[in-house]
Length: 48
Image (cartoon, rainbow, N blue to C red; front, top):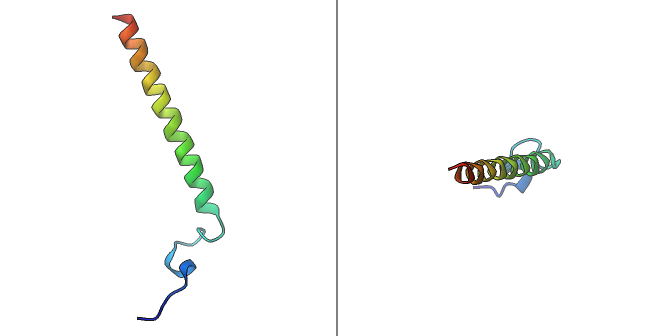
């Protein structure tokens, strides 16, 4: 098997850093959702 360059193995857009950017955005979104869920849970416990 011929050795492919890394950019050949990665999806288009990855090499240009687009994917990296969306990965950061995704992590940011996940963190916000997680914090909101935690806040709701704390609120639920406080309301009992």
